[in-house]
Image (cartoon, rainbow, N blue to C red; front, side, top):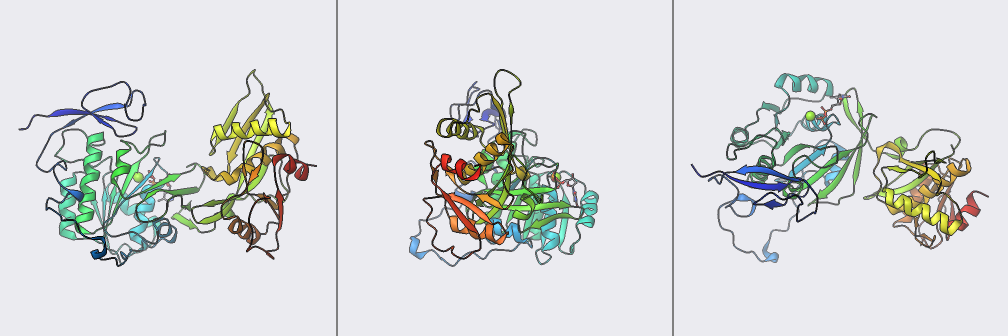
Length: 455
Ligand code: TYD
Ligand code: MG
């Protein structure tokens, strides 16, 4: 028997090392190295070539490669298909991550039920066949072509898949699967890495698309190392509060389509319902504006939508003011507050500022700066901004309001939703949006914005 040797992995970035270290040399995180025994085995992935096939490939001239577009397979779910870039690509490995209870198993079971033409092998390592059957009963759809397989040994799963030759395989979850080739428990770093690598090899060799479910730790990492994200073709991550009923699925890596797209679902008694118009859920229904809120016109991937930014500004109870932001970078919030102080003369240093993005969204689009500033000022003055006004603009360090990408699409979406005014940068090029029925107010800088809106 080959001698078992031990490797150390960084649980944050996946860096591999032959000895333990306090600090990972790659990502500089402390105390992230975890031990994982490895046994070199014939079946291991270490000595095989690209996609794990052992046969030797020759270089091919690019012009000789068959360029016909890969036919994509629809998963019977419009939002999910759109997120993947128009359906799942045959032979791809798609990772769906999220915190426990957010709806990963529900979504992955809904796929075979709603696309009955696909013969699906649904492998469950977490629930019994009976539990899956009960869930399927709630979800409705057509269970004809879906086979449930409760198994955690990967070798058995792959053997079954080779015999059954399904059109789609779902594995719930990567943390419960283990392979005999490695001497550590299921869910350990080396097991997760090997299981994912083997599933990838199976997908590439057979052309069967594989959907892999992965848990996420509280810090937002897919449990096990980041390396899992490097192995798979597509990473979709559930985010949002799992207390509320809305779930956001974000594409954070996609070898076959664009990232930064999101899909919105609502958890109902009958599973996840597609929300194809997210603005409707993210804009509250109050008739009159409330102080401390402002609506941002934002763009996520290719889709414009509007949502509410909420701020609360109050006098600091203790010596140092608190700054807290949910769904928004707190450093960016501090920067915006400094701009307000320096460029528009608002003294917020002694104020606690709390910021919240509606619906548990995580915002990265800089176009939301303007709405953040307006929400903060609205709370400071206790002045409600009319609920038919929305904002799109990036704020620069000198207080200037900068143009945003694809402003016209935001304007059109805001007009479609019945907004009466949209605030944009004076420097926005707006050619195609005449006669949309919405008034476009352009402002050059923060001082002008304050004068215009809060006079
Ligand atoms: P689940 O898919 O089991 O989460 P995960 O696999 O990510 O851990 O989802 C579990 C939650 O969804 C659970 O709290 C119950 C709820 N749920 C519904 O509200 N409606 C439904 O039809 C189903 C199947 C689940
Ligand atoms: Mg589950």
